[in-house]
Length: 458
Image (cartoon, rainbow, N blue to C red; front, side, top):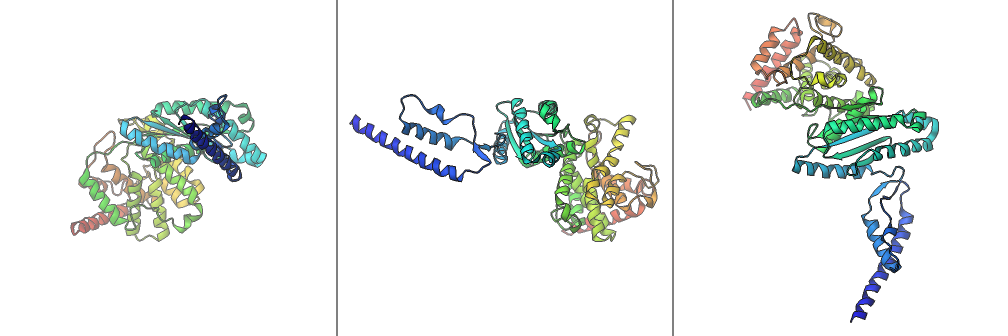
């Protein structure tokens, strides 16, 4: 009986060996040139002296089935595997309450390398960067090639401070590498942390990517980290009314950019980046989530009620969305200060308007740039950055100023509680003709009255 058992076992092993051989032959013909099994081990490690080849092949089949597929050029995880790992880590973090962080890395001047050295030169740069990242990451971290010239690192159990420290070490390592220095390649880093910067993998990635793009816009070779967002105060009734006003003002839906206006169609990738940076602002400043979206809706509603042409309404809508994008250049300690700013700190803060306009230059829409630059001008000429007065202030800027100021007043900030809608409207009326354009204030009051009447009949 024992002899029969041995015959059955060996027959199964031989059959498994034949299957492995056939799969290997087929695999060689179908294997993609840019993918290969991860070389963290080898099927040879399963082979012991004296074992029949058929049993070795059977174990090799198990190894090849379990081995993850990696990027053949760098040996790192692929984009898809990184996203799967991110989803799993987010689920674990939500259950355990542990944080985790992401670093998104973009290579500076990589396109110029391709132009000078061709694909082989670009591949050499990527191969040089990959070991610099893995050598300084923990075994538990997931390091992946995220895009053509981008990498990503998932760090379980890591808060923002530790993630930023790692990013700074990685930046220094890339900068110090002799080969990369000859190629004039450095790296830009964006960092985001769960749950500080979002509750979903997509939201956290968006903030990290935005930080990386901002670092690139800041001449590269630096690290950008968003600050944790601050929850709003408990003012549900007022915020429900505000949402009702916004929906009434902007009847096309909740998202102002689900349909790209024709003038932006050819620049959609750039607009996507700018919008991502605007979302990142919400993680840095003392606003509740949704500030830029609400200001965009309110500004678009004012423009619509004022009878502006559709193209100008689209410009005002986008200007409202990105009005504070320049705050990404304001230091963390200024943005997060829990008390009123000093005179020196306020001067630094005031620079965000000009920075925002500068960041929007690639969009090549002057009306949006000017609206962002001048949305802190005052009707009496006492505002900044240029001290414009009256109708010399761009109309879009005057509209955004009213929309933003109203939303700021009814939102809880670090250093004060939210005002009631009644108080906020009274303040707009009091500052009409000094801080705000009286005609814009008049249009806004008309809209709130229309919205209140509409809500009362629902």
